[in-house]
Length: 187
Ligand SMILES: [Zn+2]
Image (cartoon, rainbow, N blue to C red; front, side, top):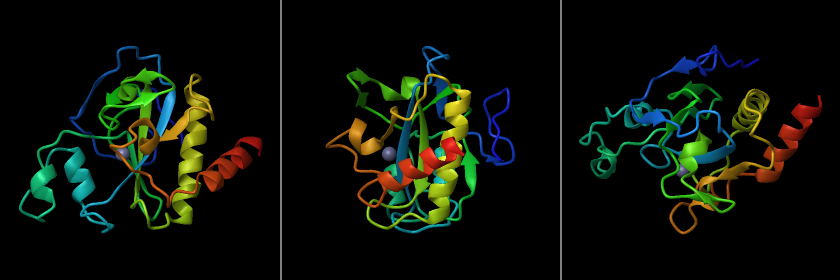
């Protein structure tokens, strides 16, 4: 059972604080959940590199792909690994830097008012069942904690940054996620 403490961190999961965050313009406005994917190097799972990217410690010489990205300043609130482990990088009341140029329902700058959840994965490879289970549970606790979030205000990075981003991609089963979420809410 996940719980969120008074400092807006999940209890019982690993915390890897990222320097890449700042205050939300309106700390009370947490009203969108954005699902992403990431894997580093792309398509490879389980290494330390996502944590290193989100903490500014990725070594550009560890892999050719890292040269181009090692200097970028990005983060998300949480990562859900292939085995379902959650890592939290930024407290939910702070602005993580995950969405970039983006717009939801006519409103831009989604980072200002959203929570970003990364699934370890790619656009085309099926996510694991435990990732769906953990994502649904995490979503449920976030919806309970932040009243401006609701099930209609959950989206993917590809939909708020079309033409620029493609994640979580065709591999993400929105129907299964929404059905799992609904079942959890009703139970
Ligand atoms: Zn993304």
